[in-house]
Length: 109
Image (tube, rainbow, N blue to C red):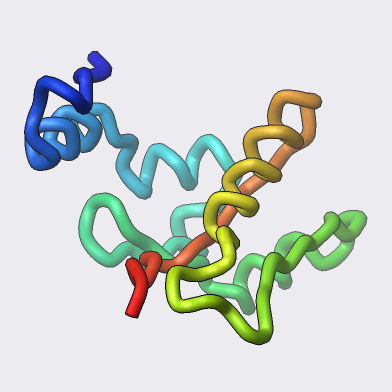
């Protein structure tokens, strides 16, 4: 259930959003990642063993890779995370198989 940000505290909105989060195991299954390729760090964070995955997928056609970067960001950033999520959502809407990876944003200086 989406909470109204004008009527609820930040922690209430975050708690509500986290209640519906998929586990890293569910995401791996949806993405076709084998169990031995997944390196979980808790229930919601994980990494993929590149060597095992590339060994299995090496004979398949290559996918596309888009890197969103900036060289000289402003103190508040350049909107790289927003651009990344916009690309992921837009390509997904067009029926493409997409995955986005972002680090935690800095939140400014």
